[in-house]
Length: 497
Image 1: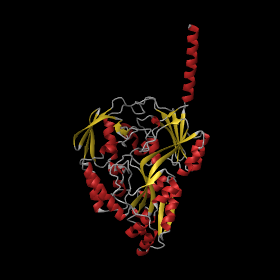
Image 2 (image 1 turned 180 degrees about the vertical axis):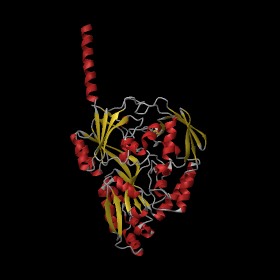
Image 3 (image 1 turned 135 degrees about the vertical axis):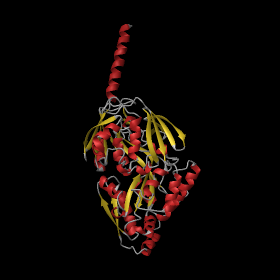
Image 4 (image 1 turned 60 degrees about the vertical axis):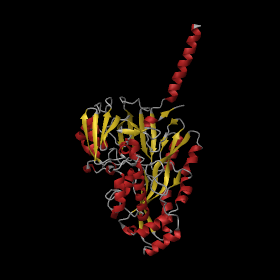
């Protein structure tokens, strides 16, 4: 009997060892379309940068797979009054150099991102915060300039950085050698090539699922897909819809997709060049066939929108209708503006679908304008897009997500007077979005956003094209459920037989 038990035990031990071996994977390799523009989480948050640095840092709050706001570095929070919020900070978290994370680091992170001297492109989404202070090693008190209904939604994006380290090395060095409290720490950043992360063994939540994560810069989509099929990559971002079937047909690969809050949109410069004329901007809007773009280029992985917003976003409305496709009307407006044959520069980068950009170019050309595409690397594109109107081009395609699921993070930074993204100014629009971000009554906020969307329709400083679906190619053995806010958290991934 004992021999039989021993035999069974031996078999079970062998099976356990076999399963562990089958599930173990030392290095996860991810192909991204572009290199990170920055690894300082308080600067750019374009998707490729965010995909990397979000694994190096923890945020104050986060969202779960259902989209609910849940604790991360903050264990809990409570409103003291309409403008004061207190956060209880975890006391079991260390940064990747072994130093303890405290309320001082949280307060420093908040005050850093709202400091105009940092010149953060994220500033407009946090500028309702007046200050933060540590009242004890585990309590942070945050004060806002007014009641701010989108505050918690915005704070899910606030990464906590180490005060002592940032002050010691300075902002420039911190960007090159970031240090956080997240599950992975910086090992090596070969700019334009790849970023290597290593598991942080003392991570407070759990053991990271992979010892190493390599984010490779692979601009060519066919190369990314070939990497996936040959096993050189385990996960690839930004799969074009017309390549999805190719991945599905590969026995070792799978397609992962989810509707997101991201909006494909067209920026139209209202303060520079021929597009300063509202008739030209309206003509461009009439010339765009949104349904055709979705059917021809997205192949079911997206749907047209009437405004610059989508259903997962609070404040989205279906009451304001966009411009219908009407090429004759577009031509009439171009002619009335005396703009026939006028050149319009169209900014883009490899981060965006070239097929989509060229389709829009063709549609606008048919209205009587001459669209010239100017493509650059993502960092240069962002610098121009966020720069002065004279150098920002006439058009630019964008894929906007605030990762906050609130319109305050969408149309406010894109169009509010003074925003680095806005090449547009309208007092009526400003009044509506300003008021909407300081009242707590949700019904009133929705009415104000309807007013703001109507102004945007009339002035056309940009237009929503479609709600984007995130589309990834993944190895069959990678288990991961993408979310609407497109957070590429390696901690949520696992490798299985």
